[in-house]
Length: 428
Ligand SMILES: Cc1cc2nc3c(=O)[nH]c(=O)nc-3n(C[C@H](O)[C@H](O)[C@H](O)COP(=O)(O)O)c2cc1C
Image 1 (cartoon, rainbow, N blue to C red):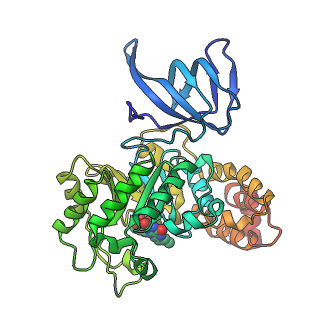
Image 2: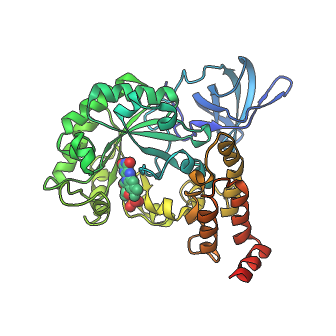
Image 3: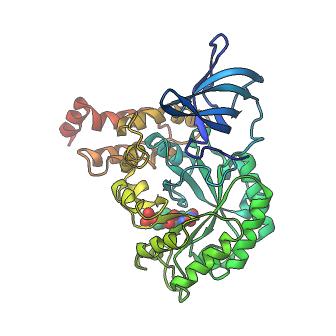
């Protein structure tokens, strides 16, 4: 399946499709449309991307054939559609499936599914990554717990850890069948545990093995396979070493590389130190892009704001933010406008939190804890008046056994309404 118009969002998310004949509106709350064929058509002076064919993944209960129109990322796409219920039969397969212009990094214990749903309320367009899941865990573990995600999280990439081509192949296939939009291989994590399993950053010393893994993963399933790596490891950190690694892996069909712009020391530094001590070298990543313009290069490491991110985009194809996005998630409200030029519906802190309430109710209804979700929102009012009170109210209230969504409502009230602020200053 080829996307003829890579500029269109591959998950043309819409809440309704309107059938042309009779203009019947069908509400499809959890539906996503995989666009299979797009053509440019001239409507008056404007060049309009017209969707010729798409596949619906979601809760359609019967096949629909006929003329339809679908609001597609603000642009109206009109065409005779052939809508079939072929859920997950057509995972996305394109060279650059979802935009990598702005990505939120895979972060173990941080970017779990609840965190990603929260981040999705702040930006519709960022590409979200899971925490790293080892190939063994994908194959043998509790898949619902390890790999479950909500449709709202799209576009979403599954990050795998491993170095056994057969296991990675099986894990990638499972990920694609579950609907992940991209499979990413971790070649950047320096922890001892990961090294013992011979994966993560130590694989930078074995580009041929990484290439074998990538080729096998690509063959087994249709989602694109990308690699997240460092600029070097230990003494293997010359510019040529990085280029050689990239070239060998690219020859196996990997077109997108996310490069953490600092080397990793495999011995002597903890993973945390390996995110802070080796100096950042953005220029080296820029030179990589200049030398390999045909590859999609995404830069990562130490980027603090969306405005800094947009400066990097003068040199590379995309940016990935980790700690800044997690610790100060309010910056994500600017992503769609600043990075993607989409100024519509810019969320506020409060609107993002309120949008989480139905999700929270569902989670609680299934026996989940409020703090599973609210732990990810604690930094939302970082640096704001009453931000500390918000954090304290949530971190104390949400861990109570019977805590429900009212704890979050009260926390919002505390920072957003005059009466809440007055109550708080009175209590203080
Ligand atoms: C708590 C934490 C967990 C992380 N877990 C992963 C992981 O599972 N996979 C991975 O590739 N990188 C992981 N990283 C590294 C980040 O993806 C990112 O490369 C790094 O933090 C540098 O980006 P930043 O400076 O924007 O945070 C982790 C980072 C943090 C802070």
